[in-house]
Image (cartoon, rainbow, N blue to C red; front, side, top):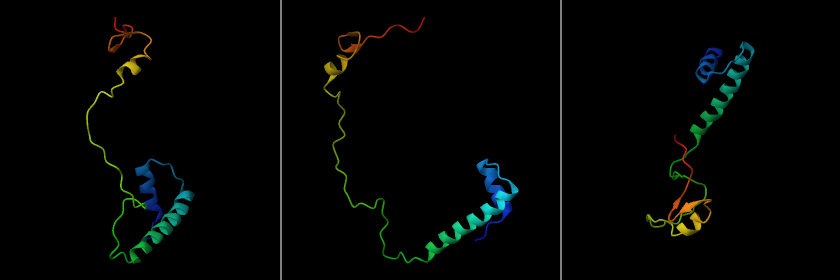
Amino acid sequence: MAIDSQTVAHIARLARIKVTDEEKAALAGELSTILQWIEQLDEVDTAGVEPVASVVDAVLPWRADVVSDGGQAEKVLANAPDGVPGFFAVPKVVE
């Protein structure tokens, strides 16, 4: 598939990229070369090849989806500059 300067201008307008006339000719050649390379992929026989999501054949460990408070409220509140039992105390910011 060959890309012409008019198509490059259209793509540049869609991408909101300013392209000069000299750059349009060069980009048309480069995009045509890229599309020719992609068209070569159509020639590859992929019959019997399973689709993959990753090149590494690994199974991720699953854990139970359990809601908890973390069990560390005291440790977290120990970092508070000012606190009341079970809560952070912050200065009033609304007048």
